[in-house]
Image (cartoon, rainbow over all chains, first blue to last red; front, side, top):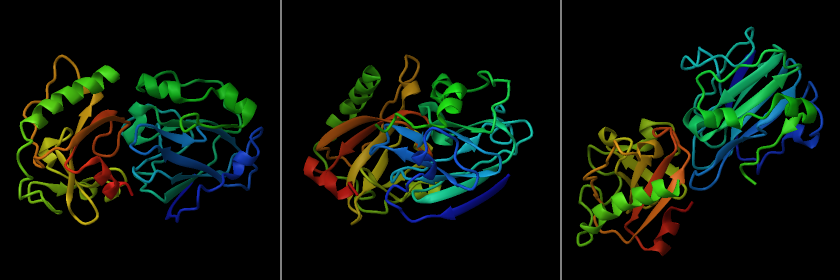
Length: 172
Length: 141
């Protein structure tokens, strides 16, 4: 896995390449963009898409489009605040740390399986996301140490496999 | 949730009423306020000016409730804000004698916030505005 962090200018909503093809996983060469979003006043926050299937070796990039808040995309892994692991055992964890508006962070995922992640200040508001690299594998992660609202936020593995991309309903 | 927010509002309305006859403390009238207030964006990673709130300062010893004091882009005090975690609105927790450094209160907004660095749990924002409703535009963007 490789990581990179950079500052971005506002792109007017930045078209997500993968979203143009909602019925399949993104092509291997494409960078998959995931937006961090929130409403004015901060009552609702979310990742969009909230679930996506990608290929091994593909890069995921999170960008904060929420003008009034900071967000993270943090893997559920003991290396991050001693959290229960919810990424493949052979995968390396990541933590974007706080991204201010306009900032972005990229991760390239290699190991097949299900990757669950969350936003540190918003886990208790249900701001979580799920990525499937290739095939999901057989074992589920159980409830672990997650709050119920976070567990409810993950799209079903079957839905991600069937649709490729699951858009968030939070901002609609 | 509505009950929780209503309770939070009731807690704060009581405190606000007694302060209606006075202007702001001189220590907080303009940005930056005097110690023990500190700039929120230097305490945690947040934008220095938050649309809808303004530039925030807080005495860290009072977290998470505050008061936070908020300023417009000209450095003038616009509101005093309390941030009350929803989980703390329960029979075993009270918030008593919260300071109202801005003193004169024009109106109050209460709304849910999903969280942010510094108060990383769902909570209620209780905003005591020291400017008229039309003055909220000073911190809108």
